[in-house]
Length: 143
Image 1: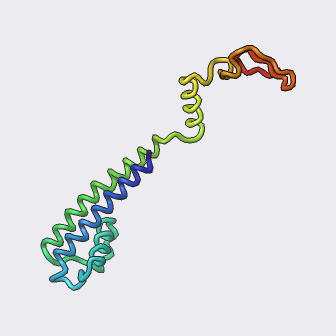
Image 2 (image 1 turned 90 degrees about the vertical axis):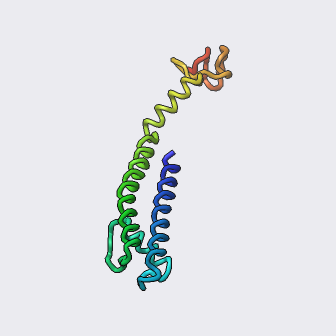
């Protein structure tokens, strides 16, 4: 189902954001006063991976810059791929008229419907009910 695919995509993107934040924090917190806590690094990784890039925070060490470059490249590959998987899962979900048609076809394949009427143990023998105006010989027929 598409809900499972959305959950997978959210987990993968969250993992990418948190790993980037952790690596940037470890690389920058000793030398860069802008990254004194993990939440600053988390903010920076969200802004960098979303390609918004406000410019208010920037890594200064070689390791921090390399980590951000790799994370952005990974994000540019992972985010569209996950979006395509989610959209494919949503597109495969039956909706509206198609869902009704497939449900009826499933019922026919399992023997609930048959050509000419409804098959049911109640209607498999010939019976008539004058009170309802119903006469049946295996098929539903209204008088």
